[in-house]
Length: 176
Image (cartoon, rainbow, N blue to C red; front, side):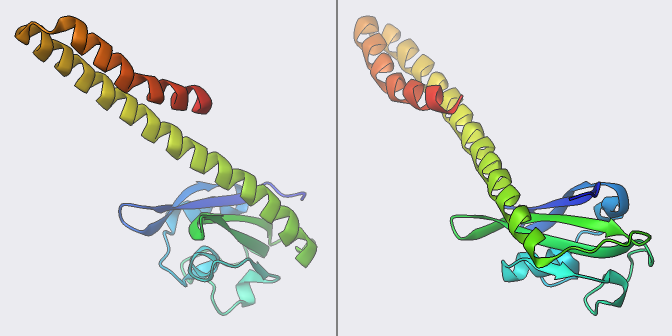
């Protein structure tokens, strides 16, 4: 889209707050401005779950006052949505000196990219959960074998541990 100014804010599931994760070029300052629902571009997109295009950020009534004036001209943000829930906000901007502005067609392109980003985020979270599950199963398997050895049931315990571990190996084989 001809800009190097972008932002990525993600919802922290533990605190249900929108946290700035990436801010480049004219949007680097966004890293210093965590927002509440409905505040600024990211907070508004997060709250509504719908894309937002602003042609002149300095003149927009929802502008964050702390943001440096004459920094951003046009800005667009789209939600990252998974299972009907907003995971974050992806945004692009043209700096104040640019003569360019985003058009409504640009929203569609950014939404396609947002879908890919959402899939990547979901996959990373699922992989992390699968790794934690695998670690827990290995820990339980080791405990079960040790307990069985103490009880003189080593062969039975090894067979049971294998049966417990097999489904997880299939799952992690598909995610890794």
